[in-house]
Image: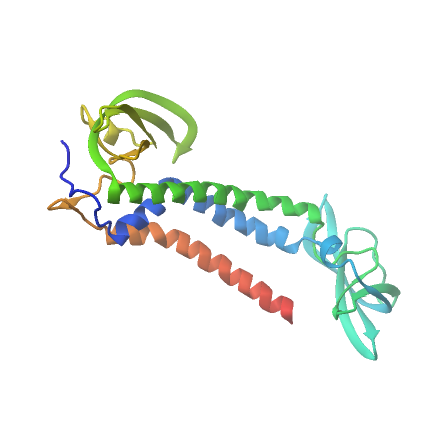
Length: 285
């Protein structure tokens, strides 16, 4: 049954717009991003990038004060932390360097490299300033995958909101259903193709990708919205989130569902934003 919708332009409630931004595929991306950022902070956040950040340095003579075994390993070799002190312009400073190779003993003298603009930044010559080598930065690919899912999903939400506001309502008939290589919650995602006639008589098509196909197959013809200026821009009303409800032809908001949809991304951003802030504060000390 074709729903009743007011003629465009329509008012799209904020909660409905939020649901379209944070759709189910977007949330998959947020999972990748959130979990991937944990690995990013643990590994890439402790990667030695001295070849980029520590290229200019001066030299001083230092003295080893302590050697510790860390809880980290690299290529099955335990990472060791060597503590030392050195003097710059009469001021005694302390530092810590890491290595998986042999370490000096407490009391040994070692050559120290330090940043002339910030003498507190230093390392023992031949060692590194962080737990891991730069190669562990490859874990950044995991949150990047999340971002690459989130961005097109949110762009799709922008298009959907535009069509809710300006689109022409009609119905389409299912002409094909194809399984994709993607799954959501162990459910196969399918691409469904619907044929419809635009108001100027052109035969056009709308596609939907979903793991819940029942909502798009429960009627002989399914309602859809399309852009009259570009009929390739179309979407099915029964795609997730579910078909918008209307009151006297006006779109009805869904504040509770929107709050739930945005809660998980907000939590992820808050947690990782806090971690970033703590790292900035600690690095400035």
